[in-house]
Length: 242
Image 1 (tube, rainbow, N blue to C red):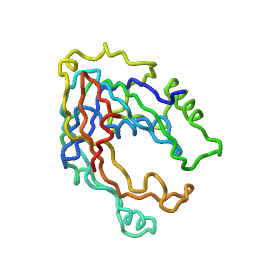
Image 2 (tube, helix red, strand yellow):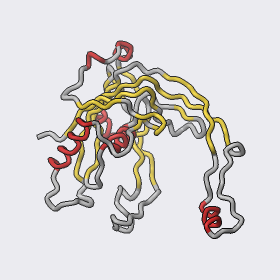
Image 3 (cartoon, rainbow, N blue to C red):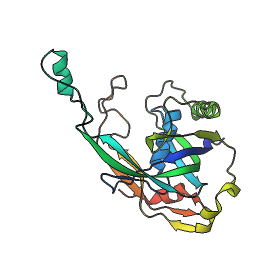
């Protein structure tokens, strides 16, 4: 029995930030696998499993839009909060009129992706000794069918939530936009594959009840091609680069 899935994800907007832009947010043309793994974790996640993206289908033509928005560059100081709790003169407030700055974003609009993925057992923090792939498969399938999630799935940034997720038996490649098909074989260049944390998701203190995780991470890159709207992630995963 296969423990993989195929889903269609749709959204009004998406922003998969390129790391080479320091201040302004500029999106990749297509989603990195790591962003889609994060989307799936919003639906169902346990330390005992990890998601693996196998294929990405880009259905809609790639359109960008721009916005300029206000951002608050400061955050509330923990020391100021502790001082306020001790009833001294500390003011923990952040006044947005004093620390507001404008930032531009170039994001995707009207997106629709087919995502083929599977999951693998990590053997970490299993709830039962007999924990099996079939158990997790049935839970994921049920949650996808019912549209359940424990946090809102998003397309790159939390500002851009997923509008619709559909579980399918197979992809209809006839629905791929003609402009995408006309592009043929597109070298997407080096893209972020995912951000890999040094702890590999395992608490440094080996205490799952009060876990302490590492914040040290490195970005893993790959160089995929989009051929007639299809990115065969599994094919290019063998050539990952740090």
